[in-house]
Length: 474
Ligand code: MN
Ligand code: MN
Image (cartoon, rainbow, N blue to C red; front, top):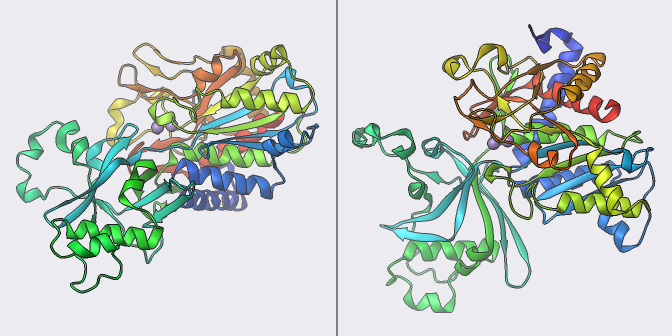
């Protein structure tokens, strides 16, 4: 069974459309590196497209009607959008789901220390990473610091051209004889992922930036550089050392995503997993106006650590939001909610591993995703005998094949690696619990979970086109 190369389906004008869409996506992932940043931008784009806040409808006791479009935000880290259809909700929705968290280094609660004149931030990595990949790179700090006053301060250092960057050091090859003998997971260990942020003591007679307490022990202090860094943070952001306790600060690769390849056919950037599915899902949702079945797009947090917690897919947020929408439509009952969920169709969109000639051995060539062969449908994920997989039903896949073929969408099928090579999970099985039709679907990625991942522009475009058709026709 041969799959088509999507590039061959496009003439010059068609390829320009592919590149235009990729350009907008490149900006999105360059601006939005954390789930909070993704939610903020999603809400901004939704409002621009005419979406209203579901909570406003609830507060003002305003009804929803077919054609209305609303969004709801969960703790600034997950978001759901609904475009209300003409048919009763009980007949089910068409749902696009993806995650907006990506692997990174999170700052610990008590992170700051000075060692031999260097000031560092202690981290705990987030998600599955090869730790040795995250050293000797320009990194940026993104996130929020919540103060006791209730104020939340946003931090982003390292993205503007004039910003400094930070990073984790690596051991020089000259002294790495012992390190190079270690197993890959021990080459760089978790507790060694400390981020260097400063090395300069305060000016001898410059007490102006220090608090009164600190002025007394200025210059006699054992940690002068740390004090200077704290003074700088106080002046720039109004935060103190104690405030790290209530912060969510992430260290991520600095700088924008970029075109990859002499022909610019690919994009290299941080966080394709899973923004390369979240972004086209969002755009397809925003373009869904007056659908027959209600269109829904859910972008969640915490997938990389098991979809747990209040902002992960396991949380009741999604179900509660659907209940609120039913209530606003005057259609709510417990049974109506259950039927809405059970009768829904979903594309659980997440990245899959794209074939890599450098590591051909981990894939089985017939059932592997390839760059350029379009959006991927993944019947099952899991590992060691499909364990942990939502195995999508044959009947549902047949329907999707018809819809995609009729619309001329270029797609392929794949597994994540050859049998017993490894595996992975997504949010699909969680939505499967409601009894809805759900299949994993997404875009192929090289270097998954590395600081810089790579995708094909035409696969991104086919995902967008496929998601649009799914919302309209499924
Ligand atoms: Mn993912
Ligand atoms: Mn992942």
